[in-house]
Image (cartoon, rainbow, N blue to C red; front, side, top):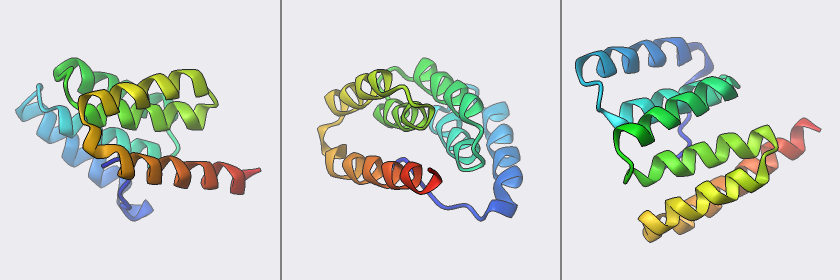
Length: 115
């Protein structure tokens, strides 16, 4: 759902590919979300959140957009906003619970390793 591993040297190429997809279809919520994932992998938290917000604006029922934004907010240290996004994600798609929990745990481990 949320995380995928694009090799770090390919992040800019992935972002460019998503830019092209969005150019073709500006309402393609998943392209915004995936571009946000690439930005998050590159530690561009503000850019990733902006993309997740565009994904949500394109499709307010796109649960993964909320889950992804929640992870970025978790990395920013905004736990209250992250929890709100996680709750909304699961309200839209309860089947994402196990995956979201796994992603949250991985994010917390990454944060702990940075300290």
